[in-house]
Length: 358
Image (cartoon, rainbow, N blue to C red):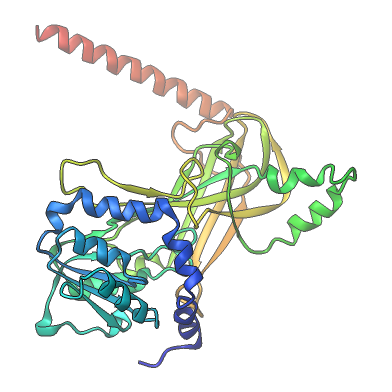
């Protein structure tokens, strides 16, 4: 199949060994996959697995170590040659077959279906430069009915934040005030930035932008997402941007705890860090003051691996607030009071029912 220049560049970029060193040394990432596989070792025994975008082959090796009888390690870039060497080095040539091909072009012998599809397909904010399309095509083409996806569920989260490490250093820089420069710097930020956000810099609870059941979601379902987030600030602070992160969970097929890979600011730092959209101006907010904005994520028409992110600030008085909103607007205070009263009445009814059953 003829590839576009963007697709060719994508695969060439993944031939860079430094990219794979970065991912391998991302311990929260690599350990999450290893733990998810070995916590479900009983399930992997004697199963047929497909590793989509195997890279160096480490996930394929984990699967083989866990007892899989066959692993198809699919890699479109020339790194497939390195994966072959790694498989030989670990004496798993009899289990792992490296397929140097796009998964869309793969044909398994005798129409074989696999029990498990595993892939580390995630990009920044989950979707950027990721290969979810390829994973979903592999699922539809190769996964047995009732088979498992590793991971099997993913969510994207967003929350308003301060960015003191980026903004406050200009207040007094080498004894000079550079607030004017900082203002122009913020205004020039037309693209999201990948950076670490301190959990203490989040200004309010997050909202889920998208929740993807990877056993059911269709490619067309992830073309665009849109969400309005209306929330009361958790503390006084400067609203300077929104922070986006993702979480992936793995199947829980044994009595072991479910494994989650999270890029939330409060979790161990990964190479994905967090994605931040800057506001052109810093907005001072008080505790419980309503913050409202709309976030749109739309797949780029010229490159299916990229998305356009657009942040729109909203007037909190013009939009509907969620039930139980934590802001200080009178209607939200009244709704919270009614909800609290109903909760007390429900607790009293439960106690009364328990006493009546004695």
